Image 1 (cartoon, one colour):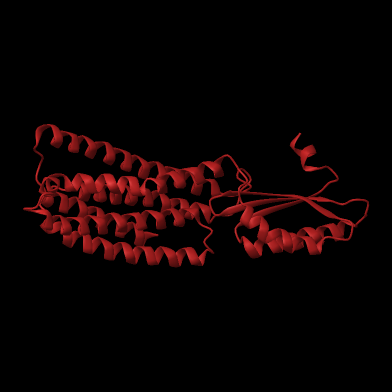
Image 2 (image 1 turned 60 degrees about the vertical axis):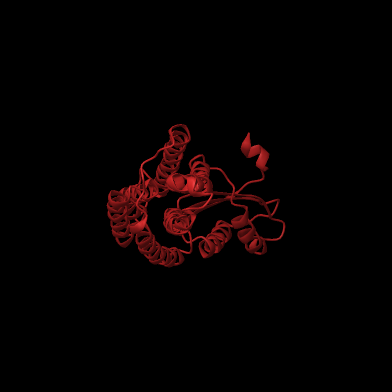
Amino acid sequence: MSYILWAYVLMAVVGIGTFAFSNSEAVLIDGVFNFISAFSMIIGIKISKLVAKKPTKSLPFGFAMYETLYTLFKGLLIFGVLVLAGVSNSFKIYDYIVTGSVEQVNGGSIIYYSILMVIICSLVYLYIAAQCKKVNNQSIMLQTEKIAVFQNAIISGAIGVVFLLVGFLENTSLAFIVPIADSIIVLVLCVFLFNDPVKILKNAFNELIIKDIHNAMREKITPKVLPILPLGYSLNHVSINRLGRTYYFLFLINPSKVNLSLTEIENIQDSIKNIVKSEAPFSFTDVIFSSKSVDDWED
């Protein structure tokens, strides 16, 4: 995680420094985006250490909720940056339409900046993807960072490409676009990237309210559990919740009229827990034997 932090710091410094030379708000937004990512990564490093700790008496299900809170925090920051950037540059375009003038942007250094940022972002993206693979893609925090870095690469690359193309508009009928090309880039990127923070916020909110939306995981687990149930037993319900990388499973099994010993019941519970661990290494599992239906439990 520390490698990601220093990459963000480097990109933030280069971005803000390039803004000083170019006067490009698109570059400034990119730099601020990286500064926010570096700041949140400091919090993320502390949280990753917390999540690795064993559950305690006061937190019997571990520290996974901090990972979800981090994701919510990061999503809000990205959302805020995009909204502020969109509003600010909308006013800049409006002023240009009304007054016919706008601060000039020096695009010479921006193309070099864009190339450097895309290279760094690509390396960081590959590193995060490797880290995600190590934890079986279970870390929502790493998934969020992967989205953020991908966004960053798109932003930086688009800035460079557009400024390269804008140079060809000089002395043409589209020359009037050149002074506000910087703002147009920002607005297009804001619209293009807006769905990502919304998705991050939606997922984090669903986790915080303990919403069961994990049908894909249920479809993996259920067929493996059914064969180990004794004849006459039925699987009434499987509830799956998630906080961060940690899943919480609840299996409701109807024992019908078949009687099993305590040892046999514990063996079934252990078998189900092993099945769950094979699909979700970071998980807690409860297996309840009851003749009550799901509706009875909801009441």
